[in-house]
Image (cartoon, rainbow, N blue to C red):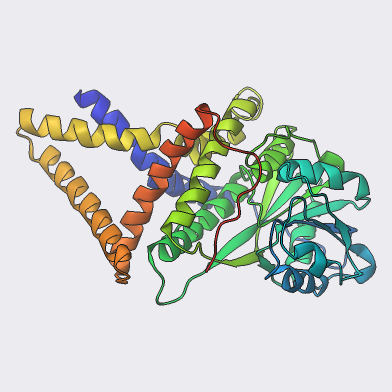
Length: 388
């Protein structure tokens, strides 16, 4: 039991902290031996198609179109396609007022991947940029993304996701904001070491020639599209200077709904990305993929429960102080999380409790997502989360 405890505790620490620390060290070592690549800013820019999938976004759709058309990129090389499959509000009506975009609409709601497949025959440019309808890009986003394609080994480029967090933010906002700041650092170091291991649908791009249709029932299509390119031996780059901004989830319930869907999609993707998990293909990619994604989406949330139970059992059978300190630390952490839940339910803003609470919510979502996936209760159709 003691051996299982220590192995489990090591895996938990490695998943959430240790991998980031190891990446930080490896990147510093790499920088010592190899200089960072530079880009030719005068190179001719490639044609770009911005692909936006929207579902019932009547309140934001015109602002999103305006934001996209005002991006700093040659107008003759910028094409915009908006897919609104299944929208039942005024999204289509309001988008129809804009003549500089190609609007594709069907009343059938078959999921985001099915919508993307329907749009692909209309894309003739060298680069595709995927972005969500409820996010807004900085003006330089496209130029910052496409510069990485000067490296022929790069097949996809992920942008940064930024959560707008106010001072009065609740647990979902503050926790989500902190999480994405940490994720952004990991993605930056992943790319410096070798490659990213996925991309967020808020903003990422690919070489059109490398696009490979994924199964229509794919839950997290952005991750799968990017990783299928990585499985071909190409690099997924990361560019923090290209970013998508969005507000946090309206509340923890909405954030939990989104996280459960992602977790269900994570399990689905692990079963399908067999090349990425095989170290005999691309060993560094496999190391990054398992460390950054697989452990989080599979065993680590269960290990948190196991470690707590084992630690309690060991404390009653082993007098060593280290086990009592570790158990006491866990008890305090989970009490802080419960206090975060209590305070959020009463609209009390105490940020000291937000991170523990969000951490527990995130790991619960993984367990719930796994259960939902194996019960086949997760639809591929994207679910709109309420935002602040």
